[in-house]
Amino acid sequence: MNKSYILLIEPDRIFARTIQKALESNGFKVKVFHCGQDALIAANTTTPSLVVCEVQLVGHSGIEFLYELRSYSDWQNIPVIINSIVPPSEFVDCRQGLSRDLAVAAYLYKPHTSLKQLIKTISLTLNSVANEAT
Amino acid sequence: MQSESTLTQQLLLSIAEQIKLPLLQISRQAELAAMGLDPDYEQVRILAENGMHLIDGYSLGVKLTNRHDFELTPEAVSVPAILYDAKTQLSSFANLYNIDLELSTGGRIGPVLAHRQGLQSAIIALTSALIEALPAQADGSQKMLQLATHKCRYGVVAGVYGNFPSLSNDVLRTGRKLYGISRQPLVTISHTSGSGIFVADEIFRVMNLKLRVSRHHRLYGLGVVLQPSSQLALI
Image (cartoon, rainbow over all chains, first blue to last red; front, top):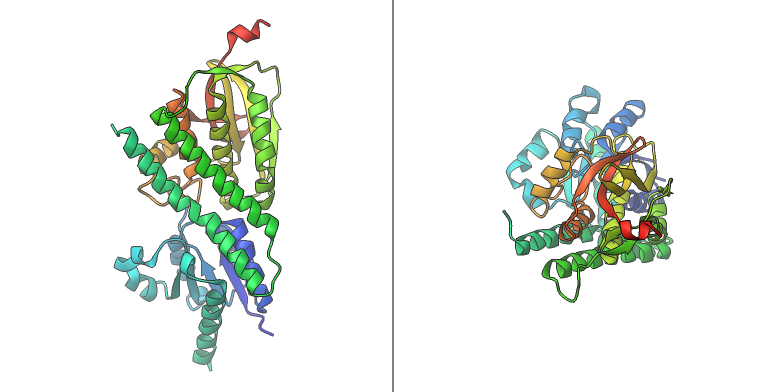
């Protein structure tokens, strides 16, 4: 059974619960946060295996959260998947920045990403990290 | 100065962005069912109804703006009754977000002069937007919203209040400029397009009222000042 710990940053409580339910049924351990600041505090206690993050948050954006996450040496290699309501086309100009500076493994557009696709992307990302480590 | 049609188009864009959220939530619930997990059908019903409230509010705003089938004649309206009705309609929606929706109508508040349907729709749209926004606040410790009314120097305030310390008139002013253009016009308050707030704002504008940031006890929120109906207060 998979017991990877996923840190989910999702501002909408209902949507977060749905994703959490789907991930937990696939053997992941999930902690949900509705804003980046709370997620950083939690990551300090237990380092997550992977972060799934929305960019459109209240106050500080998800991108700001990712810059802060990456500024700590311990967290530079945590894989990050963006699952957002903002279409990726709006990040065309800074796509390089997302992958190079923030090491975003995948950018998923919520309306076009089913729960199955999200789970598959998480599994593939975790597998590729595990393969790199061995 | 923006024309009224530009305003309603902007509002429509804002709603189009907002309505994605309940549709997405419903669609993912259906997917849970397909995955063999228990979907929450009650949740689906509440989300769909809330989406429809928003659309109803928008169409009322447009009809009032265009004066279609509507007379804007004010009548004597009981604010506590309007707030109670909003609480009844939105309690289940608030429960989905783990929020206690409370009524705070202390003191003797007489009737006010307002367009009843407009006031009712605006309060529902406003409350619904703040219910979605509250859990995403950085300090999400408090999970309570108050539908409240109190007297002030200029009349009777009716509004919705919660733990929104970053809410200010500047934030609201910027939001008014950006809605329909920005995905997140009230960035310090809501992670959505906050269109319920702008639907309420538009309805109040047509009723010659102005939505303002105000306080109720220690809570911050949005409210509108209504004029007391002096004629009925004598009875």
